[in-house]
Image 1 (cartoon, rainbow, N blue to C red):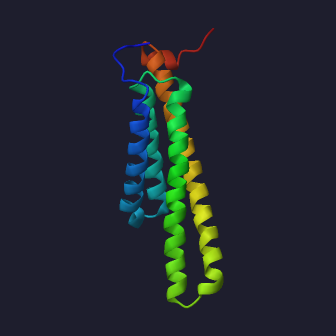
Image 2 (spheres, helix red, strand yellow):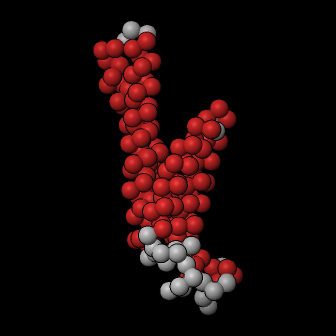
Image 3 (cartoon, one colour):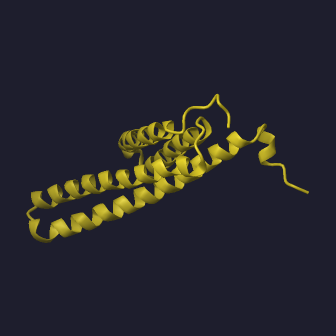
Length: 146
């Protein structure tokens, strides 16, 4: 292991930055459309996972686990936000009865989508960071065995 790298525990910091920054980027880019917002979120979370895998001495499990847990936490936050917004909107038009179930369903869908997006970005980024850290030169990544 390279002693010039950060402690494996720093991966948790990268995961925290990914969650907070991902939320911020999603809200900043919301007016640009959902495709732009999702792409910016995916790119930022993937970058943080890559840096967590590349800049630390973390093993594969140590590099991926914080991002898996952060993805779940981010899904819970999105569930709460979407459910709250949808319940408030339904109550303002006088549809309070069944609207809470519909709001909870929409929140669950949003949470599922954000968790899948965050998991794909973070697992891919962390594994790629670990693989890039293991090679001496980036050209070794594309060299195929004979």
